[in-house]
Length: 132
Image (cartoon, rainbow, N blue to C red):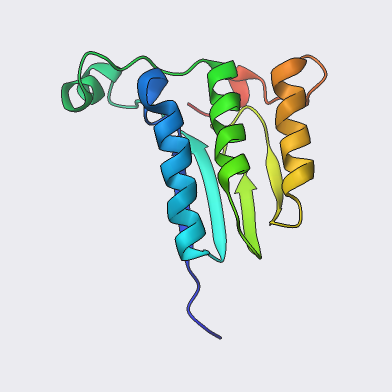
């Protein structure tokens, strides 16, 4: 068995100001490394958002649910992976996504687009189940 590479991405880490930059540059890193396993979770602040702001700055505005969906869509759109197992099923995620990239990229994007256009029709994890 060869070495297995994995990447964990924190969706929402850049907040509103750096969301696009975070999505595009993280996708670029993944494309360059072609990890065997890629997963995402939503950034949270278990020690308080103030502590995070101290390192980030006052410009940080956390992404709302729609912003998180738009960031994950942009991330997926920029991915060019050949055979990476993708999981976005951590308790922090509103939308559970599972597949293999690039094979399942169109389906995953459809699922994200549905969550953006009609959240009521998408299968979303209720807030109380997000484990935050």
